[in-house]
Image (cartoon, rainbow over all chains, first blue to last red):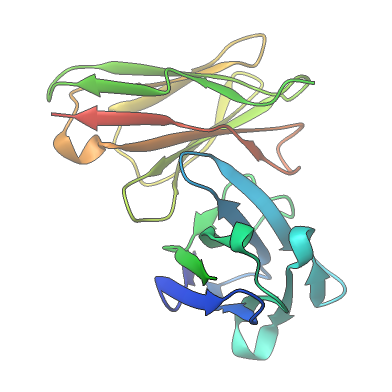
Length: 114
Length: 112
């Protein structure tokens, strides 16, 4: 069985500041890890994913995440926040390398202040 | 190429009633997954259909059931609605069982 914990249900940053959203996972088998973004009244959009290989994964909109097996973490970062980044972010884990059956964390709402 | 479309976008039902939600998968996609997202929470996996057969199921009671049709569109049926069934229901389709899933915008169900 697998689970995901996202630390901090709400994160607030100033425009231009570093964005750091935390995700820790638990999995009995090698995990596949994902970050999704959800804008109000919309579905989920895949930001990035880790399956195998390079542990630093780059995604869309300038986001990246690093898989750290020793820390069971997959934190999401962006060097400089933009107002358009304000949304809900979900970390998810799967045992499939494409993530058809996902276990999601509770989400982190990112707020960006002007 | 059309994306994943869900209908209706919103609906209100009374406790004890039955509801059917519909999902049209992206062109060429033969796998559909359904998720329930309660307010303020992350989505929870309900089940997945691959080529008209249930391919996996999450921790949901049997009153949650589904269908996938030959054109790979899908339905989610919920019987004996409870207040806690109020949620956003998300459908995701993928080209095959082990490829990236693309999400629709969801159906907001309110049970009163």
